Structures are given as structure tokens and as C-alpha cells.
Length: 274
Image (cartoon, rainbow, N blue to C red; front, side, top):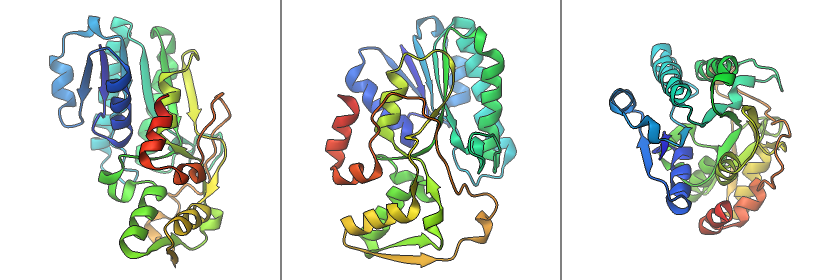
């Protein structure tokens, strides 16, 4: 039996889709709204072979600290304690937001990032107690299933949506200086589920940052649209990652944004699971 939390979220949906097609195990899905009720009632821990913990409040602009800690920290600790007790392997979704603008040095810029860093510290301190645990600091994930994310969707999704609806996409002024390590969600699923690394805390990105300007130009070219430049929002100043780049830790051929945009959704999904 495999337990997957956050199964209705963007990344969780992609894990679930993969498992439904390629795993013969029973799958138990856990959503944010019923997470606490579920963990209080579930009693089949001895049948669980893997926990894929993707569930979290992922809004980087959320300022309700109690709400963030209740789900991202306290529920996570409750779940991981079950994993320790029953010696269940864990795949945990951390975040590259823990680095802020300091490459390779933790310096979280928002409350969400702080909760992810707290959990990485917890995992580090208890690592020897698990049968196996891997925490993945996801970089800037994009791909199928982002429709519900609104303003928290990736630039790849937002720019595409804007240009399809209006013929234009909006870029912050100075976007040539904002570089992110964009990683396709199919590569996330493939790497997380099919690696033989030991327990640890790992960066998961392509290690090849791309500027927002380049992403915007690629999408504008694909859909024959225009780019409109807008001022950088005041509320994001000092809380916005201007550069992200994962450490090179994976022997995997990651798909670039340019390659992704050349594929249809069906083609890109097929490549993620072969």
C-alpha cells in the first residue's frame, strides 16, 4: 500500500497519475482538508510500503503562521513519526525556497519557506531513525495540472494562459535578470520514484537556470504573441527569489523549457513514464 498526501495538488496529481498506471499496489490518497481526520483514524500502517508526502500549504505569500505550521510542520511530524514507528520509507517534498537568494545557503524569505526548512531540520535530526527518507528540495516546477494554482502557478503556465487569452503575456521589468531553475513535473516524478540514493536531503532541479525573459520569449514565439512589460510589484520586493540553481546531484537527462514547449501535453506525459 502506498500513501500519497497532496494528491489533488499540482505535483501530487502527477505522482498519482504515474502510480495508477505503473504500480500494482493499493493507493491511499490524503487531501489537505481531511488530513488530520485521516491520520487519527487510519490504522493500516503495517500494510504501508511507501509514504509520498506532497501535501502542504504551498502559497509563498501566505502570512497565517498558525495555518502554515499546522499543516506543513505539525501534520508532517505526526506523519513522519508514524513512518519511524512502522519503518515505512518516505519521499518528502521540501522546497528550494529555503535558499532564498543565497545559492546553496539557507536563507528563507517567507513563512512558507521557513516551514519547509523546519521540516528539513527535523528530518536531518531524525534521519537514522527512518528505514529510508529522502527530502527533495524542488526548484521551480512546471507542467500539466497547474490550472487550479492561480497566481501561484509557474511562469510557464501563466504566460501560456495569458497569451492564449489576450495575445499578450506580462513580464516584470528586468526579467532578464531573474533566473530560475525550471524543472518539468514529469522529471520530478521520475527522479523521486526511481532513484537508489540513500536517505538524505537533496536539491531537485536541472542545474541550468533560465531567465523569465527567455521563457517569455519562447512562449511568445510559440503562440505568435507579444510581451508587455510591467513594473515589479512593491509587495514582492525583498521576498522574491531572483536566482535559483540546484546542485548537480542527479544522473538524469532533464527536459528543458524549450524542449517542453516543443512537445504536446500527451507527448511530454509519455516521456515522463517510459
